Length: 124
Image (tube, rainbow, N blue to C red; front, side, top):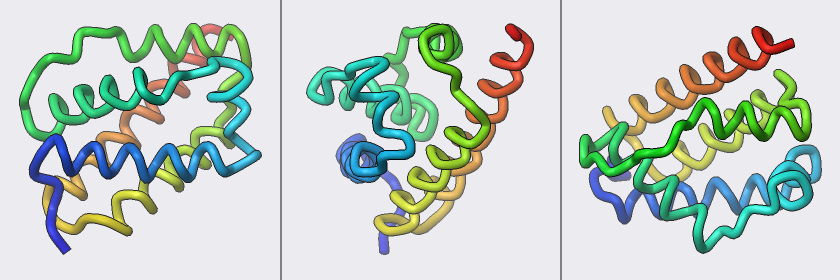
C-alpha cells in the first residue's frame, strides 16, 4: 500500500471520507441539512487544504476555524460528532494508504479536531 504523495491521492482520500460521512446518519445531517454542502465545490477545497498541510503545495486561503465556528452557530458540533468524524477519517486513510504522510495526516486531523473543540467550548 502506498503513502499519500499527490493531490490525486488526497482526492481519493476525501472522496472515500465523504462517502463514509454521508452514509452515516449520526453525522450526515450536518452536511446535508445544516450546511448543505455541494460536494463538487467542497471536495476540491479539501484537497487543496490537505495538499497544503501534507504536501506543502500552498493555495488554501480560507479560515478553517471560523468556518467550523459558523457551523457550530447553526448546530452544536459536539465532542461525539468529532469522534465520529475522526473515526471515518482514520478509516479512510488506513483503507487506502500507509506511510509517513498517512500518519501525519491523521495526527493533523486529530489536532484540528482538538483545537476546534477547544474553540467551540470557549464560545459557550
